Length: 313
Ligand code: SER
Image (cartoon, rainbow, N blue to C red):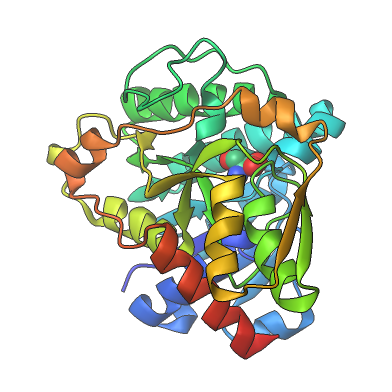
């Protein structure tokens, strides 16, 4: 069995990805790391504190654990990154470089690192963004993602480190909530609808963004990581998407299940970030090169989110 390290393992994607990897590879083969380790975490499998901005700790941890596979998810999301660009750069770029270096030094077999729709900018076509296109993001989060994509390509070309990645759209999840992202409204709305019957979204009703539901998000990562290397032409930063909808359409879809739900819209500074991102993506390269295929559209995701959260809340 391969030995796996996950960074950012207690975040929105990390927590569900770690569970999925433990089911597949056995709990003891997947080491969950994070800046803070929640108390309950160690009962599910090995868990360690790891701050990816601390190069020496990253080196020490990788040398000790000798991972074959690395999933590097530790990052600041877009809205919090705007509040502290210096620290966002430290975590999202320096942190990535520390992990790439350590993965290379222990000759890890494969590494996954996610980019994002935030890597695009106002000059990018907004509809059906091609795989290879203009990348001129205006947020520090997006600039760090472009730098990261290029850095991953460099480690692949220069050192032969098999680092792979996708550009995730907004991720909707019922497990761990996101923190500090621009697409967080698409998750918050479900909690608010069930708990309070009302929600005020921080974007306009007509704000359209591409999205993906967590099971597809996990599937994209694990499927890409299992793809035969020789079939990958793009390797890093594949566009992947599952659905595109406006905040108003999402509210209407929830209302079909909860007729009394009331949604208002009060855009704040996050609207400008959303406006710089595309509305939909062309993910045909991912479909062709490693068989990407999402399962959830807006109605299927909404039904599953409501059922899962209702059972839990
Ligand atoms: N969902 C992320 C965010 O909103 C974008 O990658 O920050």
